[in-house]
Amino acid sequence: MSVETATETFLGLEAVIVSPVMRNLMAQLQRVAQTEACVLITGESGSGKELAARAIHQYSLRSAKPWVDVNCGALPEHLMESELFGYEKGAFSGADTGKPGLFEMADTGTLFLDEIGELDPKMQVKLLRVLDRAPYYRLGGKKKITVDVRVLAATNQDLKAAIREGRFRSDLYHRLSQVKVPVPPLRERPEDIPALARFFLDQQNTAIELSQGALARMQRHAWPGNVRELRNVLISSSIAALSDRIEENDLVLEGEEKPAASLSADTVNLEELERQTILRVLRETGSHHEKAAVLLGISTRTLSRKLKAYGMGRVNEDCLTGSVDE
Image 1 (spheres, one colour):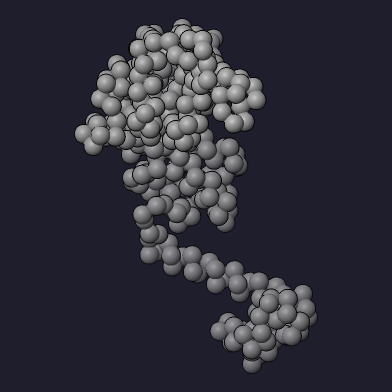
Image 2: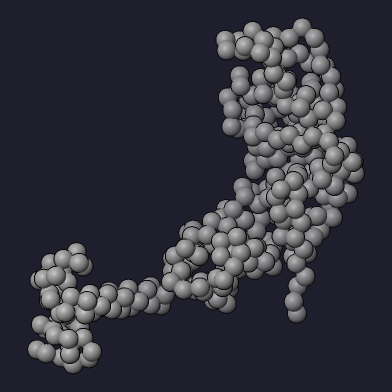
């Protein structure tokens, strides 16, 4: 029985939704979107946390308002503070003009704090105050700023463990996690793999197909990198495939070796390709071994050795059509 595939676009990111697990997640996101609660989105790297955050914004009453996102692990502490809260002219060396922070830019809309677990402890204190609706100053500013922003946060870390280790504030955790939304890893929703595979292949080459053997192997794989890993595997496999059909042995999956049969098949294919190339060059050079060796980039001795392996010695044109001249 065929499974209905739903494809939706959230702020430029497309979501492929097939499995019951993902359909339930989308229904949860729609319900959460209708509230003003802070949402903590958790899940493994590459599982789709940003997509979930964008869906919440798009489903919400703030959908026509600004969407602003920032990766908390991408900037050092002093730059993160100026990015979030802005600065005034002369606040520091190089501040020739003032600049609004991301909170101001997201006013009346949504601010998405990705990788929140990477946030510096000092910044955690300042963020908590703003989440509690306290006015704040730009760096070097004298006028307090008040904003109306809904905050969504995401992490692939265990924040409760980070709290025990003193790396994350428990009060900030509870403020951010008024609603918790876990995004399931790809291995828990194998029904999504065929549709996701087709989606990513179409972005590369609509003519390329995926064999049943390749698809079965993909559905058995654990996908530690989740959807991001799946996309990368399909891109590399579509480039490496010898035809418009990706076979099981074309897949290079992290932590797995190709089946022995596949390795044997690869060896046979490479040997046959080499044989056909040598014979083609010999035909083009009129069976001139020295010229053929130069074009092939090998020595005449290597060429002779390979021809003997093919059951040929010095060859003429007749040899290249199937007869042997020893």
